[in-house]
Amino acid sequence: MPLTLHRQDLLPARNRIGAEWSDALDARRFDVTDPATDAVFASVPDSGAADARAAVEAAHAAFPAWRALPAKQRAQILKRWNDLMLAHQEDLGRLVSREQGKPLAEGRGEVAYAASYVEWFAEEATRANGDVIPAPVPGRRMFALKEPVGVVAAITPWNFPAAMIARKIAPALAAGCTVVCKPAEDTPLTSLALVVLALEAGVPPGVINIVTASRERTPEVVDVWLADARVRKISFTGSTPVGKHLARASADTLKKLSLELGGNAPFIVFDDADLDAAVDGLMTAKFRNGGQTCVSPNRVFVQAGVHDAFVAKLATRVGALKVGPASDATSQIGPMINARAVDKIARHVQDAVARGGRVVVGGEQLAALGPNYFAPTVLAGVDAGMACSCEETFGPVVPITRFGTEAEVVAAANDTPFGLAAYFYSTDVRRIWRLAEQLEAGIVGINEGALAAEAAPFGGVKESGYGREGSVHGLDDYMHVKYLCQGQLD
Ligand code: SIN
Image (tube, rainbow, N blue to C red; front, side, top):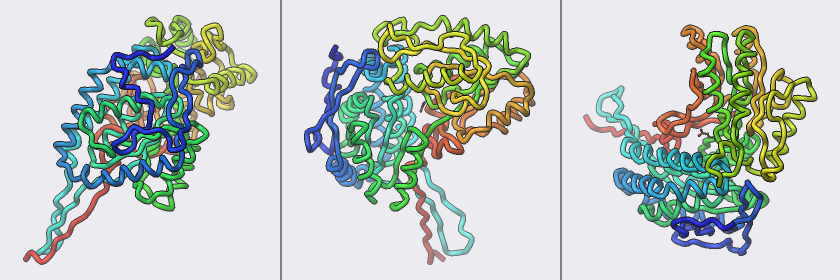
């Protein structure tokens, strides 16, 4: 079924390079499918190296004028972009849900979440203050200025097709950078719709350039950007292996990097926790976007004294979740993004069971609903050797491990190369501070399952990457500091 929007022009289905909506130079296209059915409902350009180069040319040409625009004017444009996103929340939400699969309420919510980053960075644009530094010798004045890094390449994931674009492009534009962007191949349409609105808001041609490409052709596009010295920064959200590749491959031109990579978040429930609050927090954190978030709890540790009660309460809640397509307003969990995602989830469940784990609820694919549905699942008796403990499942599976002591669980929680998010529930104030400091993660939820916010720094440690998105730190990632020293003033 084609997607009908109030404003059909939000679906240009072409690249945006400079002042033009354009097809790939060799006219290739690839299909966009609805994850609920795998039916094709649109197609976009399958771009290659020549398109990637054209995008850099356009972004490079637009940079001097955009950086020279007073910050207040850039802020006003971003503010209008935020307003337009909210004015078209329904269309954008339906688009997000159609290409990504999340329930419509979440699609609408994601648009508001995306707009919150645009609004935040509109405000931050005018506060990119530098420093006046007391000089250590007479006759000198010393200053530190913040300047935009230049052309930024943004490579975005499929799980939040609106929010991840906004979280990268808004700070880049606020800082005075121009952008070339390759949206995820599964969800290219939302990014193009956002650009339609950005242009309407007054973003000049060439400041945002979007190049769509299939999975097969993406390396061709990204390799051009990696090799081009005019691209001064890469901002990537995605897997750790790809992040490492980008870090290695951008070394020759020493680009600045923001890498928001994989996670393996622990979620710890202590005997002294408020159990109902812990169940609520886990439901929120785990089942947002069907478990397809980098900060989704991937390993749930429950202390022995409350283990059985917690599992029983959780299983009741998980068993009651309504799975279905975005088109059904009652759906709480949509399809997974594609067959590869479902295969991984099924493999994790099978591996856990084969190694002695137990399915408490769910545990199987829901083929009657469509090709990509998986039942919300609780696994008990999980141990550290199982695939679901070592790899990010990225699906609606809660693997539960029983633990005894605080020291044991802190060691287990940190026993992973990743360090994006961690969560714990406890009412003991001393333990709260101990854990908050000991957990190796960039983001820690303390008696809270919903962590992300535009005003907060989002990012990881260890192999979950570096750089921060959102907050005041999110703007600094798109700027460098220039030191000015003026002498002969005595
Ligand atoms: C992500 O999964 O990469 C982002 C999640 C969020 O913004 O909360």
